[in-house]
Length: 395
Length: 179
Image (tube, rainbow over all chains, first blue to last red; front, side, top):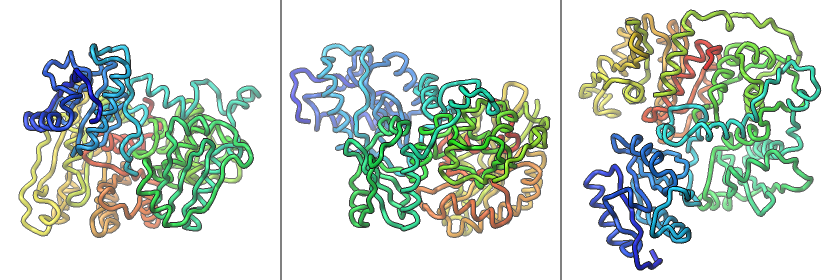
């Protein structure tokens, strides 16, 4: 590290095996002796490193969150995790990666003048950019308690925010509503949004087998690679999400074919990649925000051609319920709301996302269907299934 | 004590043992033995009897998690194992030579049980071999005449993945389950 300081910052190692502690001691002595000093008392530390693979790793992480909510934290594990407010490093740790993370926090701590006293009031976000995301990296699943680190970080506030981003605000709108004010809240026009451009571009690149580059305002790019089934972008989710809600002006987004060689080069150099369907699904959810594409007939019968890969897509528990129902048989959107007794926004969001991925069979003739059928008949084991679900979510 | 069970099946090395370990509230009882036949090429130990774990629902109810032996020659046990089961979790190892052959074999072997209950299919080791893709599995089961089944990419080591797979099984059994 190039920074010099008269007094090193203090770092505590939590949950590490003796052998790993010794290795880290060696690392700090060799690489950052002037910037960092390992201390035993974690309460005095400016920064902590935590080994999540410790048998009590989750508990230790929870303790850190509870006792030092604002203190920067580096979390290490052999498995992939997404940990809000902390920098995650996957083992085996590379010297360069660890140095980069330490440098980031060192600069931030110095900038915030935290080199004398750690302050629980100031939160330092994890360093950006993150290490290149593997294209199979999982999306954060909303509403489930089972993400391995979720107990410590996916608090209710965070869940609510993501549900809001995908499904809009809680409401009591009935899909059968006759009120024009409610009807206006139910629909959006995908043709005026980024979703239409992205969907068209994905279809085109898949059809032609040719990579495509989308130019977005602010000199940002999304590159679609049909053979690798990947989307590369230098645009974060936080930046892309609001764009999905805005109406696109004419010629605001440029589309151009890309040479295979250039695409290959970009694939190896760009920071972030994700499967094409993952991007399309997200953009559809963010565009819909709990609304239906305009002109959707709520009495049209819908069923799933096949299940979305919900372990690798942005999903909430309600999506599993709708998927299971629509996989079994055809139902109208209006009946789906009555059968499942859930808010319309979840059905609208799921419908929009499935539509973007072409997962739906939609009957062209709208048909009224009686609500009561085999699916809705009382299942004698429903209570048991509910208890298992509850157990799975809190475990 | 009310007793229920969920069955985990799939070929050797698909992650049944690991999946049960990740959900069980007790240290799972593993009956792996040193593999002495061709399975040793895929897995040092292989399950010759069954794996077993428990999800404890309060004090008066528990769910037994049974893993079938991966080797086909033990299929005589499967009938016994599935009797009274709530549903089937089928794990398919995507890195094996012919994952579709495995898919056919297990769907066919458990056909009667699946028709009475439900199945969720977890495709494992996609990080080692990306093809066939999940969409290819959907096409395959559709061509075999099966309805739309939950087929999800899972990492059997990740509790969340296994949990979601079981949740998809429960919702398939009854989509109207309220949270």
